[in-house]
Image (cartoon, rainbow, N blue to C red; front, side, top):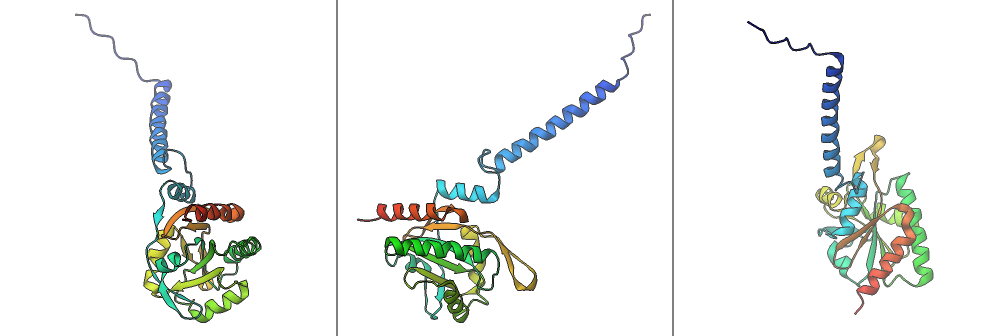
Amino acid sequence: MATAPAAPAPGPLDGLAATFALSLAVLLAGLAALFQATAGGTAFTTETLRRSAVAQAPAPVPDFRVIDAQGREQSLRELLASDGRVWIVDFVYTRCQTLCLALGTVFQQLQADMLAQGLQDRVGLLSISFDPLHDRPPALADYARRMRMADGTWALLSLADPADRRRLLDSFGIMVVPAPLGEFEHNAALHLVTPDGQLVRILGLDEGPRALALAQALARQGQP
């Protein structure tokens, strides 16, 4: 009675083929996850994804009670809508000696450009502190003096209720990490907000002139 030939023993090439197939499957799964996580490959960092999402679909800014350097408390949404201006918004804390100084320099240049062009009635600058436990009116007033903020052109606010801090940061996509000596590490950008409280664009610190041009265009669109 004839017997069937024995199957050949797997050789080195068979093992390599199996390893290659497994590696390819893992790679394809990873690429699929990356494609999904980066919005179809259009964004490769959280910051880029955040800016892309806002540019495509403006996000409403939640309302908060805020306080200024004179101790006056008001609604953030009411402030944004008070005079029809488009706002360029950044986030700082008054004890910062690093990134906030760069932000301050950018805003100082924007303030100078706005005043030179007479744009302060159509565009406003707004800095909001994310350190409300420390940044009460005296600290805000000192920071405003150091930054040479022009009244009516560049405003500085802190949260009236420190419990709103997390919601504020999340609404603008600001990431804040505690650092040694009571300081913070945080991301920074220029946020364009319309008078009706819509976050419509997020730009980098090196895009001050573009931010001002876009704010002017938005202000013209909103004119009756």
